[in-house]
Amino acid sequence: MATLESIERTPTFEVSPDEGLAIPLDILAKYGIQVGQKFVMLTHRGSIRLMPLVSIEEARGSMPGLDTIVDIENTEERV
Image 1 (tube, rainbow, N blue to C red):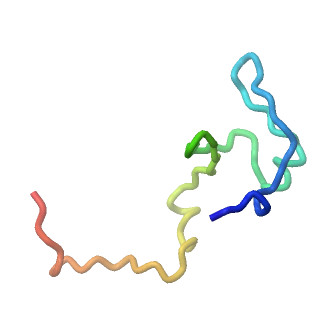
Image 2: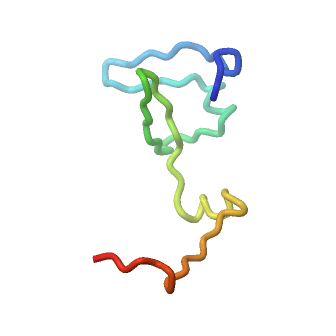
């Protein structure tokens, strides 16, 4: 679990009148965020976390050691 000491502090952001969130260019560059990139918003206890959406192709190989083999013979039949 993150502690307050481990959380990186960044410049403050402001929501524009058209409900857009302007992120400073240096932050975009630091995290490799591109114009038009899509994110999913996760909320927890009043805080917001933006997670980039990635395609299946982009995600492939991102979890080494994950067992992806499904044993059909020993799987319960579901209706």
